[in-house]
Length: 256
Image (cartoon, rainbow, N blue to C red; front, top):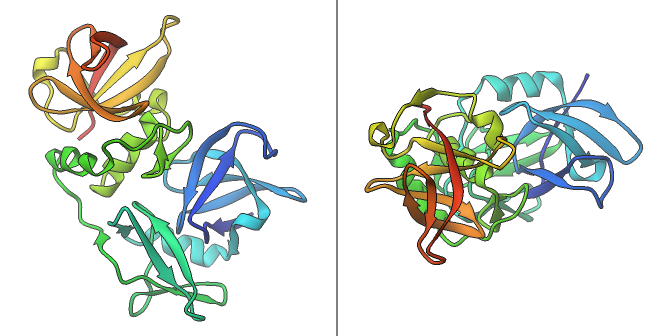
């Protein structure tokens, strides 16, 4: 078994081993994974954080030892807290890191990937926050454009948005909306929900395809075109700009 870590900022993870296929998610700096299959150009990987699988370019990650993989896995996660920041290597070269990138520390704010030592001196998020903090964190990404497979302030999809906000507050969510809907406790009514709970929405075939974070006063913040705030009722999401319902409510879940 091979192991790897993202040593670049925002790595596209694809459905198939081809640059032209769908980007299903992204690998942020510092995220580590198992390499399930390695080909000439592509590797199929499984992220440690959410067990999500996909293909990444072999030139866009760094192999690490099983020992380092295990050490990172056991460490309390530390995430960058700025929308955009940087790490510095031993040659004083900068690598940009986006919000929620992982910075594994081993000594004096330094961590090693093979022979490269990286230092990060920015804001660190590492303490579990209460559920209401998720909504406050979500305001950071207002107006971020929607991007299928995205999970950064430069572009994000609905489940990437909810996963990132929960992660920054010290809580784990799976990657896709349909997967996240399997977590937590079902609430019977909107009135039972609290800020930070999740609302899930389905399509005409009954498949869950959208998720958002519930706020107070029957509002919801979600990624649809951009990260935006709309109204939530028993029917679904009522878009405050188009004055119509855009998503049909399926279930409300209390995750924490």
